Image (cartoon, rainbow, N blue to C red; front, side, top):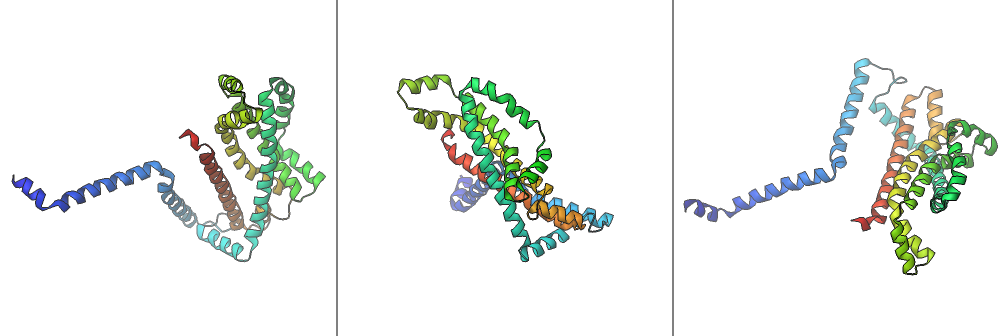
Amino acid sequence: MAEGTILRRNPKRSTAGGSGARLAVDWRGWFARYPTAATFPVVIASILLLWEGLVRWQEYPVFLLPGPLAVGCKMISLAANGTLWKHAQVTLLEIVLGLLLGVGLALILGYWLGKSPTLDRLVSPYIVASQTIPVVAIAPLLIIWFGNGLLSKVLVTGMIVFFPTLVSTIVGIRGVDADLHDLMRSLRASRGQIFFKLELPAALPVIFGGLKLSVILAVVGAVVGEFVGADVGLGFLVNLGRGVLDTPMIFVAVLVLVLIAQALYATLALLENYFLRWRN
């Protein structure tokens, strides 16, 4: 009875305890749902501390291994005079145009190969044979034929992103249930209705898997093209930094390339969540 009286006289104690418990549960739920966002600052801070500690411990010269502070100062100076944005926007343009070219062709050809096994058997050996040739070996030829401007970099990027999207499109289209095709035909659906209402939604989960790989490879393709021959771009900055032993510049260019790849991948993930929201 006394205990009940105490509880009635102190309702805030019970409410506060419940709120604390709910807060703890909410934090655990948030951490479980967004583990990357929760651990990212800790991981980055740990890497920077270990990096700075290694440089100070071994007393590496700047041209061999610069510390995070030297790299940060170099990034600020390149951003302040406009050099970083000038080269980054060229590389980003090459990546986007290469993706549009390679992915667009892969989606169109992949659809027809997925729908026609005969055409697949006829064309696939030549496509596979073309992919066995390293892009690094073809890039110099493209530079010779098309110059060291934008077109050659777009072609290199398009070639390197073409195959993953092509394969995922073929697999996705072939994975559509045949019974659903029969159902759509029995309902007298047109070819366009079958494509937009059945084939495309059913194949999108697999296609997005190939697109995620293509987005990452697009960054590699643009840099490969700039390595072979270019006078602007982040790959050019890497070559320039290597030539003059400006290692902080190399680190800055690589860091910006990583940020571009992460931004493109995150954008594609958002598009995937939007177009595949029906699965939820």
